[in-house]
Image 1 (spheres, helix red, strand yellow):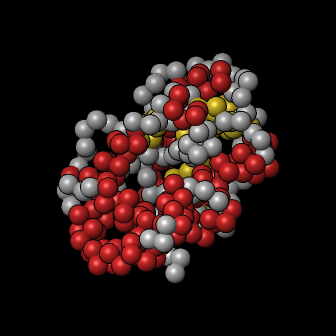
Image 2: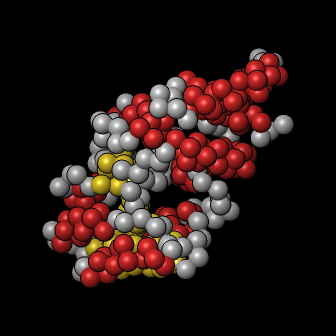
Image 3: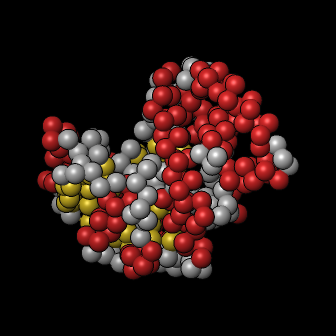
Amino acid sequence: MLSILIPTKDYDCHLLVEELQRQGEALGCPYEILLGEDGTQPENLRLNMSAELLDNCRRIIMEKNIGRANIRNTLALEAKYRDILFIDCDAIVEKPDFLECYIKALKENEVVCGGLYHADKQPDTECSLRFRYEKEADKQRDAATRNKAPYERFTTFNFAIRRELFMSILFNPNIVRYGHEDTLFGKELERGGHKILHIDNKLLHNGLESNSIYLAKVEQSIMALNEIKDSIVSTPLINAAEKLQKWHMHGIFMFFWRIFKGTIRKNLLSKAPSLAMLKIYKLGFYLSQNR
C-alpha cells in the first residue's frame, strides 16, 4: 500500500502523474497519487487538471504558497497508506518497474532512497552551471557510494518512508528559505537510529534552471544552512569554514574573496562556468553570513 506525494508550483507534471498511475495500476496493491499545488497561480492550475481524471489521483490546492517543508508535511498528513513516496515534480520516470522496486525494498526497510541522474546532453546553454554541477555530482550517486554515507547522501527528490515514522519527524516548518530541509531531515533520522537504504531506482531530473536563478538558489540554501547550522553540526561547507578558522586563514580568504567576488560571479553566470569557482563562491558567501 503506497501513497505517492508530489509537491508542485506552477509546473506541468501531468506526464509524470500519468506514468506513475500506469505503474500503480499494475502493482496489484492499493495506491494513491496526491498532487500538492503549493500556491500555483490560477492561470497555471489548468496544467495538471488531467491528473484529477485519473483513477486513484487527487489534487490538493493551496491558494497561498506554504513552502517546501509545509507542503510535504501537508501531503503526508493527507496520505492514507502505510508507506509514502515523495517525488519532486520535475522528475521523469524512465524505469518501467520504478514503483515495483520501491514496493519490494519497503518490505524490509523503513526509509529507502532511489536517487537521481541527469541527461548526458546539456538542454540549454543558459543552464550550464547547474548542468555541470549535477553531472559531476552524478558520478557519486550510485547506490553503493550513497550507502557509504547514507544520512549525508539523503535527498528528498525521490525517497520512500513509513508514514508513521515521517509523521514523528516531519520537515522542519521553520525552514522557509530554499534548501537543506533534506539535510536536517537526514540528521533527524540518524539521531533516531533509523537506517536508510539507498537503491539504484533513479529518476531523471528535468528541472535545470538558468545560471542566474541557480546561483540565487545557492545563496538561498547557504542562508538556510546558516540558520540551522547548530542543528546539523557538519556539512562539507561547514567543515571547510571551520578548517579556515583553525588554520587562521579566514581573514586572508575573505580579503581575496571580496576583491574577486565580482569576477567569480561573472564566471559562474557565463556559458562555461568553473565548478572550482563555485566552491570558492559558496565558501565565501557562507563566511560572509557569519561575520
